[in-house]
Image 1: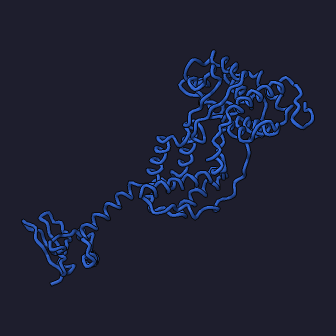
Image 2: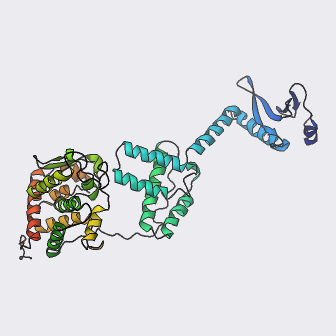
Image 3: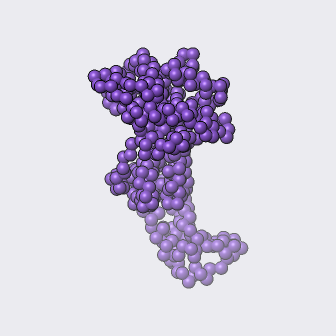
Length: 410
């Protein structure tokens, strides 16, 4: 006879466990402790098995019958409900462990291990992803939808940080794609969000490209004074001559700089393109590095922090030095030395554009062209480095420069 709710409620415990049968294999197991457990007896592949369906009264009689019917449907389809139940629990556990935050941390660790990101890039990416801590961090990644990501990133945009919103969206997409690649997600929910944020303003790094103003800047740098004046002055002077990225300059180590061979070999983990970049050194730069060597050599960082030689100088040192000299952020930046060199070297018409691009450590935008164009233009770059230093010296002294095919400029 099928069970009733009243019969179940009135069932009393005995010395030993006993069963109260319902129908189609469903029964209630009464424990000596008073617990009442729903069980389903079934056969699959000729073997008798039992499946737990919950406890009474948490699972009512009606709910127990519903779970029994669902299990019987699985059996009819040739599936073992006990195995399917274990799979469901495992998926839930994996889903709980695979939160967005956990996978983001895992992705960052892999980027660091593979040296895909430079240290400064990793630090910036970690900061941007941390902006998602209040929203997405603890959510299972399989439960996150596009609207969740948009709401989280839009809050950054609403705060007026449009560039950060775009970068955070890109990094969130990288986390989702990492989860797809590792088999924990089917697709990236940010793929349909492109174009949803406000357009960001493309702001180029401020740079001085007029020769009289550049000469004035070089003279101002020569007279630089302040905390750690010697090292900061030399950093500014060398930056103007070698025009590497600011992060590459401040992370330079003495074992990378060969003054006898006149070359600075920047390892791939420190470059934006993740490729080694060799910088030819002019006579002037060798002299500046020798002066620096007497202050910070012979080992470790060439431009150490003022507080400890175990760390490189702050990423703000170069720009702070320029501000101290009276140049605003809209006039000149540490990165602006690269724009200055690129503009004036190209304007000189003395050097092959590819040689200038190699000197700037830019990737070739034409990938097919890059495959066949393997010449590093080293000999031309050596000559160009010396010409550039001589050119800067002439400007610094207030001399007149006569460009190819043009009139003399003061």
